[in-house]
Amino acid sequence: MPGFELFGDNERKEVQDVLSTGVLMRYGFDGMRQGHWKARELEHALAQRMQTAHAQLLSSGTAALTVAMASAGIGAGDEVILPTFTFVASFEAVLALGAIPVLVDIDDTLTLDPRAVENAITNKTRVVMPVHMCGSMADLQALRSICDKHRLLLVEDACQAIGGTYQGKPLGSYGDLGCFSFDYVKTITCGEGGALITNNETFYRNADHYSDHGHDHVGNDRGAESHPFLGYNYRISEMNAAVGIAQLARLDDFLAIQEKHYSIMRNALESIPGISFRRVPEGGVENYSFLNFYLPNEQAAREAHAALGPAGVDACFYWYDNNWHYHRKWDHLKQLKSLGNLNSEIRERLRNMPDARFTASDHWMGRTISSLVKLGWSEQEVHKRATTMAEVLKQYC
Ligand SMILES: *Cc1c(COP(=O)(O)O)cnc(C)c1O
Image 1 (cartoon, protein in one colour):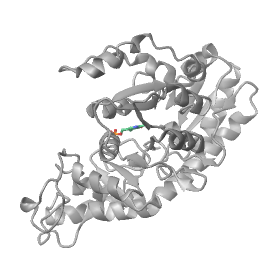
Image 2 (cartoon, rainbow, N blue to C red; image 1 turned 180 degrees about the vertical axis):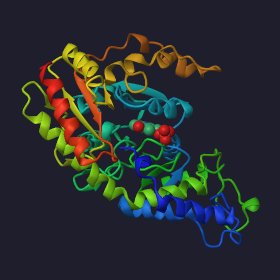
Image 3 (cartoon, protein in one colour; image 1 turned 120 degrees about the vertical axis):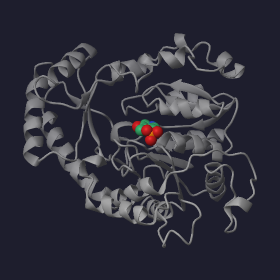
């Protein structure tokens, strides 16, 4: 997955453009910047690549989630439905807006189970947020019809699946809003950065203003701009955006490399009785950033995972015990450990979180191992890795 593996001359050239003028900020300084508008240029390229009307760059993927929801008017007390398998950024963004994260089960797609989503809807629900973890997507058509029926927003977190598609559409472009991260370990990186995409003109305008202190960006005098509403600072810098221009131009090359490496590993595991693969919803194409598979049970998965590293197969993850990505270890969330006071509504509504049980999620995650797909491997390395993986896994099936 990590684009940083292939950082090179194109990235350096783009950054050099910015260094040559010293205009490190995305807004203003028109005369000094000698025609370089890196953030704007990347926004246009991203919107085009993702087939949406608009893209707004932001300082991180977490900022993208926060601004996406803020731009659609999500705020205090609104409920946002999230999966138990995600990244902590999902609930951080919700809490930052004073909204309420509602965790629900995943299924064998390793993403939101549409039935669990429907069961969790209340009269406070405003958003369904599928998280396309580890390169593959949620059943977006099922979620779209639930959202339409209950008049909810569909906000896709595509931070780990950029370049994947569903029914021919780029992931992130199917929902009302879609979010990407360009942090250092994502498929394409800006060092730090993120973006939202949307076809909704109002959400886009709100995101543009909100991410820059509420500035309306009318006219040529930043100091004289007015503020139609309160905002915050989630701007990306020109330096980060410059890196992203070079990386986005190589996205399709990166995807092709990932698919090749993924297929070599998958072919090696396909015939092992007892190994099965994560279900990809019909009409979906992964971005191949991870190969995700199931062992027959939790014990086998745990033992196989423990054996892979010493056998020389690095970068395999057993998310079930992971404290960033799976609900079991989110004690700071469950115990509401916050530096300052959380507002009383959040405290009250999350009071029972420590008692929540997610047996369906535990069933799938307990059996899951994910192998990262690296860009920098040589073909020989991938073949060796695939053979060793198969040898190790056979012993636990
Ligand atoms: C990386 C990631 C984020 C957050 O992105 P940052 O740029 O690190 O803030 C959000 N969601 C998922 C699923 C991620 O993997």
